Image (cartoon, rainbow, N blue to C red):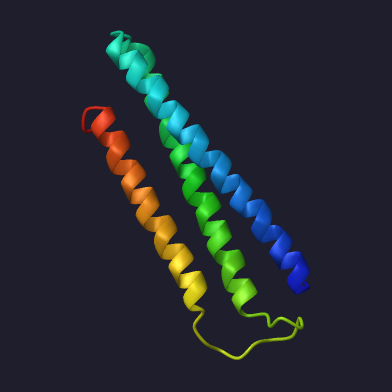
Length: 114
């Protein structure tokens, strides 16, 4: 697989992550609304959907991280690169992780700590 192919997969994976984050946020809003209105039975179903969406997000992130490792193993000219560390990619992963933790804490506070 060429570097361009891997970069294309990475763009698609990032798009999937963005979409999944939006779905998780929307589901959290819907869940909070259901709880506020006293629809506990429906809120239970919404929690199950939320758990599925969060797992999907985790899988998309794992896929993206795998693609990034593949990209790191490929040099700019398409051949194997020297083993090493890519600081820019490490920062990206770190920023993504801290952003997910902030989002999770915010959503937990909105949903009453669950």
